Length: 346
Ligand code: FE2
Image (cartoon, rainbow, N blue to C red; front, side, top):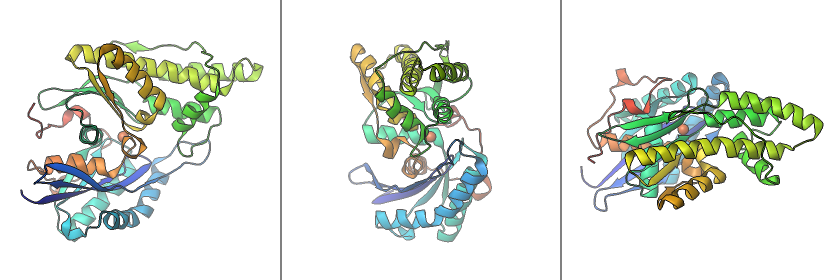
């Protein structure tokens, strides 16, 4: 390949719908994000986002968003070399809505499709943006919690949640104490935690080997919240602070163990919870003590977005991968370690 190669990526596996365009310049050997617009479905107060309503949101916004992505990038469909879409994991109906749009664009524009693993999208976007070469990756979001390291053409899962994702635990507790879903329940937990005086409510600390568990912590803090908020012995801020400190300490501990195991001193945090400044600070502190470095990203790229799907899809496309139309299905279950990372030689 010579000149410039452009990929359009469509992400819609949960409540964010994103379409991004990424360009690879053969002369400079650099990837550039040309555009990355996003629309978020915000569930009504007190509720989580449900598949049907989320899919309707994506269907309503996907065509205007594709036009916006092209306009912002200053390109036409003719300039695009491949259409990348999230194959999984995620919620069935929103995933299908996005995949159907990708197929439509592929047929209309006569461009090849590339199916992308959502988690690999996060990782490759993080590597390109931060310059991290071979970090241990902490992937934390509303649907995923994994500690990952690369080895022999595969992103291997060293540890993960055995029940709910950490973001789901935070979101559900936010709803229990009446925090808003706008812009996101996890963001509102973070802001609430800053308002208190740092009073720590003891909570279960659940690490099993390299895996973590959050469902028991959520049940426990829900009961604590009822008692404490009724008798006034602590505030919502104290509860949010205690929950964050506990679950983030568990994640930092397992990440540190993975670092020791693979002999690395670099961590890349990806996923929506990765925007949390307290988590970034705790991770940076641990790495400072080890003489290492932590790489984080801001909300534009940490949170699900289209450019990350374009980035991972483009890497695969440049190595000869195309997804035939009859294989362009999507799936709710698609583990990070099922993908062969053919574009890495280390
Ligand atoms: Fe994600």
